[in-house]
Length: 443
Image (tube, rainbow, N blue to C red):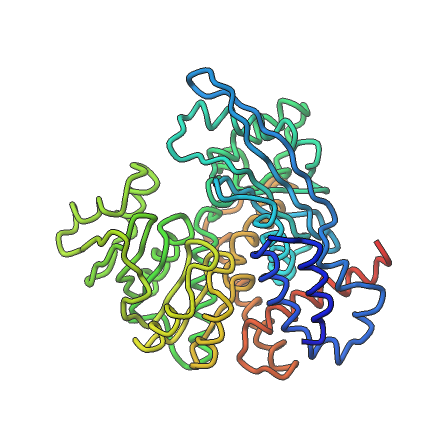
């Protein structure tokens, strides 16, 4: 790797942040042909600047639980790169969140946002707060306290956060309300992922899952194949997973397995996304409840979803969930395509196994860009005080995902790796950001 010294310096300057190291290595490893063709990109420490966040914000979030006890969490916002436009990226509430998580996500977001073709920079944020098991009042008080610090860093032309794991339209609504209260401005475009009644885009909840399937559809079409009739497994049971399953079913595929933190749900006749939606979005229960309504289904606690034979696998739960052993199992069982719905869910070893075996591999920064794409469309609607229909917004989403697929494919071919979506995504995302940075001088 020609940029090995840059990578080693990133590791030295950011000790213990394994996910961030992994994300940086993956991008830098793809850039050898770019450096050969564009040596000017290694001048002026451009790549070193790109690997260093423009701003890292860490703050205390004190809040009071229902028993009157004061609790303290830690909040983060990493504004990674604003060369293309205002910072844009989600907020994640989960106990595993720490600075390294947010930096890795912000780094990935920079290139993902670049691939959409929209004028938005990359950022990420969140807190080590777990909304699970908390009352409505506790979640509201936490969100309000979180926004008391975060608001000073936001603005529709500065930084526009959205939701992520643990942050849905409920949490976004509480934060937006607090922002409006503090600033005395109804600045709808300052945060996305809002409920439609607050100016949120229709299709936002569905966008990442739908977008993944649209990317899968393009990958298979390029190979002379189609989604229809494919047997699929989808890890996770959150927004991305649920709406990926919904779109897969709509296109004629059969989802035979999905999962949650407790285990794996298997239904040979095809999982019903509406039942999963009811369990997870309304009842907030376990997938094990599914078998009460669908007697032919089974739920196995602690099981591994990647052992189930399938033609399409979509890891949509969390980072590094699909390792080398799981990838070999998928290949052995006849999998033809893997599309990342979560951020960096496949380990580097797994990616090597899949690509060397001829499996079509859709990397997260390309395949799951549907969420931020519709967030960008929400910003457009808010700026124009407009309201777009579900069908119109979904059509725009599909066009963007088709464009991302074409960009990745064309770039991979141009730089000597035909069919390699990972290199295509990394190089195309990098070039757009890098050219913008060069045009703005040393900043």
